[in-house]
Structure formats: structure tokens, C-alpha cells
Image 1 (cartoon, rainbow, N blue to C red):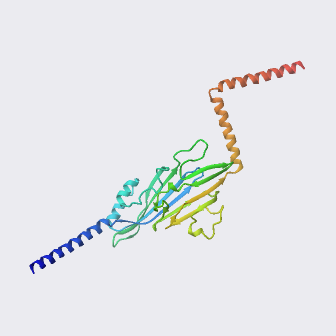
Image 2: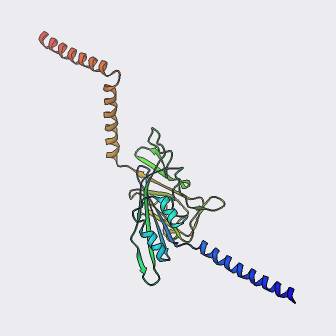
Image 3: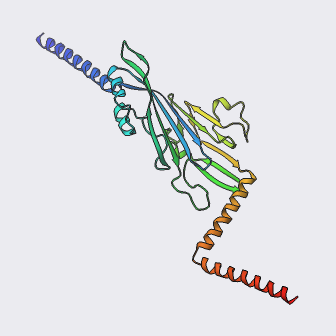
Amino acid sequence: MAVEIQIMEMRARFASFAMLALLLLGTVAHSAFVLRSLQITIDAQKNGDANVDERISMFLDSQDSVDLYKSGLSINDLGSWKERTGMSEMRYHVSAAKVNIRNIRIRPQPLEQCNNVDGTCYATIIIDYTATPLDVNGSGNSTTGMFLLDKYRPRTTRYTLNPDTISTKRTESGDLLLDQYTSLTIKIPSDAKLEALQPIPSDLIDTLELPSSTNHTFTWKNAILPKMQLVYTIEDPLETEIIEFFGSLEGSATSLFLGPSGAAIIIILGVSIVSYVYLNRVSIKAK
């Protein structure tokens, strides 16, 4: 009988210990900053750069988290915000190994929809920056960056999205994965002609016809993007080609006269002009 009582006491103690462990585990796993949404917007530029805007919306579930957020409003460092919030998505969603990330701004927004009874609030942190190619070769074709450039014919440039530069979650096969919290928007210039798009966003499946000169904004939400592809072209007006031609001609002339042979060329031209004028005068007098 005594042994059974001891066994029951041990079981009761074990159960109490297990409940305490679960309670502590739940406390540790609980985050004071809860992700509500992540909106990634990539605005393509004509030179191949991309202006990126990321908006991380969150729920602050206690007065402590509200105070912690308010005390960091002047912080302009993403690493500090990631440590402060404990959120894995508090990062750049463009690969720094593929592009240069420049002109970075971290802008925590004012608190909103605060509940004074339970001390909770909502907040958004905006991260914006410019993604530029790592290098550009001499022909003007971008070999790295979010968009690869190919001037495949006069006045016309083809732009091809490099999906490897987008750093969201991935499937086992390597495709881009947008979870229930994440949306991705890509904007192309207003004078661009869309040539290829894969996959087509759900809101455009029934209306998009390629090539298209009217669709310039594309948004994907809560989706897998297999073999993602986005290709568009921009054709410059004829006057742009003329201006570029004379600009290059002026540059060539300048480099010619200021180069190592510039002095000799100037002397030869001067002698030629003087000789022409002299011979012309002699010819007139002979008549």
C-alpha cells in the first residue's frame, strides 16, 4: 500500500513538472511582436536598377512590446530591429550576394489602433533601398542585378527578371514561395511592353494577353511561383538615338584631341588650313 502511495505521489509530481515545463516553453516561444503581413514591392528602373519597398506590419501584444517599439523609433539599423523584435522576416528580401543594396532607409511608422485596456497596438516598419547591378560591362548590357539588360537591336532593350535575386522562402525544388503573410509586387516602366510572364497573377489570368503595353503592375500573394519569368522591352524614340550618336561623336572627338596624339593632330590641321588659305590666295592672284 505504501509503495502504491509513493508511486501515485511520484506521478503527481511528474505531471506537475510536465505542466510547468509546457508553461515555460509556451512563454519562451511566445513573441511580443507578431507578423501580420509582409509586402515587397520592386519598382524596375530603365537603367536596370530597382527601387525596393518592404513593409512589415506587426501586432504588439503587450505594453512591454509597445514601450520597446517606441524606444526604437530613431533606430535606422535593420540588425537592431531584428534583435529587438525577434522576427526572422526583419531582413532584406533581396539577395545581397546578387546585387548591391544602396540608399537604405529604415522607417518605423507611428503606432496605430492601440487598445489602452490591454496595452496592445499595431505597427509597420518600412524598409526601402535601391538594388543595383554588381557590375556593368562596357557595352552597356547589365550582367548582374535584378534585371538583365540586352540591347538586342537599335533603340530597343530587353529586360529579364533574375528571380535568384529575390530572397523569399523557397520550396524544396527552389521555387519562390509566398506564404499566407507575404505578397510580391513588381512594377515595370510605363513605356515598357510585356513580352513574357510566368506564372500569371490570379487577378490577370482571364484578361492578360501577351505582348501587352497596358499591364505594368503584377502582384502575387500566398502562392508558389514555379520557374518564375518576367520579360519586357523598351524602345527608345528616334530622337534619343540621334542625341546618343552626337554625344558619342563629341566624346570621341574630345578624347582624340586630348589624347597623346592630340597636339600633333592640331598642328597638322593648322598647317593644312594655313596651306589651303595660302594656295587659295595665290590662285586668285594668278588669275
